[in-house]
Length: 279
Ligand SMILES: [Zn+2]
Ligand SMILES: [Zn+2]
Image (cartoon, rainbow, N blue to C red):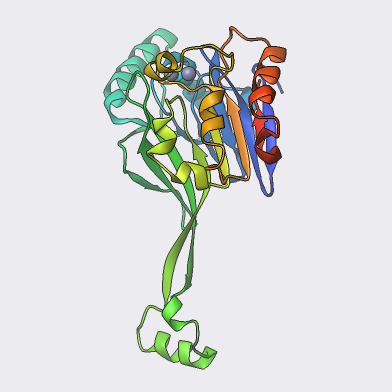
């Protein structure tokens, strides 16, 4: 298989976070087991089989590969993909695809679905995605993937099996929906993107950005540009309940050694070993 873009892998229990993120270069992630991906800054050839994508915002390092991805799926005779993206961007992306379609002399079939903060997207009986507002320099969304199950309502848990069955047969809905946040994807954001959406701290897996690590960088300026510094993580270190935190989107002004040293100096336990870096 052609190896056109780097892929880093971060397994956690039965899920794998796969992808890559570097500021101003490209960002793309997917969870193959859930058959969904986030952001289309580039498109590794082997990601083509994932047919549902959630785009956080319209900076090119997060969306530039959208036409390429759609064209590849058509060429490989796969179903048109479904791409969720911020509502305001839909009409522009439709126009761009129309122009590219003429330049490329090929159709670009896909379903573009506009999303606003608070929207809920049903992927299957077990999986729901919700969108939240984050804070960046263009309108931006974060996404939460929930696993939902039907559980016996708490008021019935003391009943015996036959009593529950009788209730059910009499038409009572004895179950209620329970949701568990599996994956939270922040995209590019200032710390408000986490703080205003506390579920980001609770999801099993958090995929997040940590664009800056050097000491002395002015954080007010970083926040104004809709990004985060490693010190923002230090300040919030007690809040992260996630089992795996994948931080990426590091600035290209740092090399690998500077990033590792910058993070390990400020977070020596790497948040109890839960923090992994995508460099
Ligand atoms: Zn970015
Ligand atoms: Zn951005």
